[in-house]
Every structure is written in structure tokens, then in C-alpha cells.
Length: 56
Image 1 (spheres, rainbow, N blue to C red):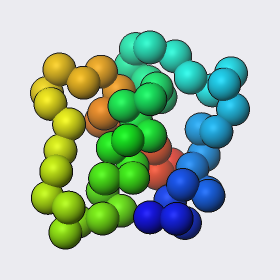
Image 2 (cartoon, rainbow, N blue to C red):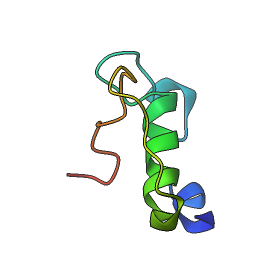
Image 3 (tube, rainbow, N blue to C red):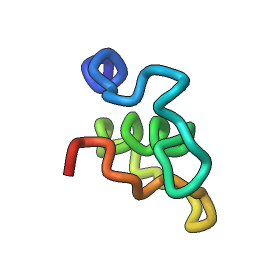
């Protein structure tokens, strides 16, 4: 999780946009996916949660 936070590619405020992303939900989704044992997910209404934060 620390590596995900340290190397998150959208760290500048200018990188963010509401729709489709990246936005704060994109960051939270990245952190949550780096800890699979957390078994948590953002709701379907969380705009930006599916934005490809890993360069896809």
C-alpha cells in the first residue's frame, strides 16, 4: 500500500478532473486494490473509481 501511495501517477492537483477521472475516487480505488485482503470496493456511483490509474 505504501508503494501505491508513493508512486501514484496522478499526484499533482492539475492531474485531477471530475469525470471520467482521475479524481479522489481513483486514488482510493488504487489504494484499496493494493490491499486485496481488505475485500472492499467503492460503490457503483463513485465517479472515477474505474479510471485506469495504472497506465492501461
